[in-house]
Amino acid sequence: MTRFRDLPQLETPRLTLRVPTARDARAMVRFVVDNREHLGRWEPGRTATYYTDSYWKRELNAALMLQRQGLMLRFVLELRERPEAGIQGHATFTHVVRGPLQGAYLGYALDRNAVGQGLMFEALTAALTHAFEELNLHRVMANYMPDNERSGRLLERLGFEREGLAKDYLLIDGAWRDHVLTSRVNTAWRPDS
Image (cartoon, rainbow, N blue to C red; front, top):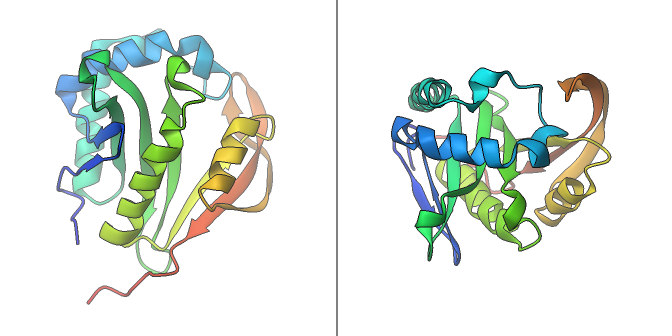
């Protein structure tokens, strides 16, 4: 079983999923700046600092520390045939809880130019396989705003089931937004030996 302190790298037919480090700060800035408008309606409000190297160096170092503690795991997505194209997206498992829950939340984002090519499905299929088989999570939860139909279809295709609707769930793009709550359960979960 993979430990969280490991830096896993996953390969799919078209993508490499790897854990970013502070050396990736510039590439993360490029990704968030290039996708500011594309992702803005689905994300919390951002300050100007969010779009700086110094922010992302701190953020990526903090994420590695949380990963070593078993509390999160972030992957960035890169094209296998064209890594120089930069970060195409990310998939992040946060708020990992062990004990009786053995679960985490999944968040993800894809570059505006990569939408509609099946890349996020490919990436999340690999990331979820890793979360269930290597990290032995039992439950992964992912929430989306009702008008984000693309995310809803993606999660359904990945085997997530709708569990309810949370009213005024998160402050997104300056307003409290409802979210559809979904989860996928690992039916092959096994107790640690």
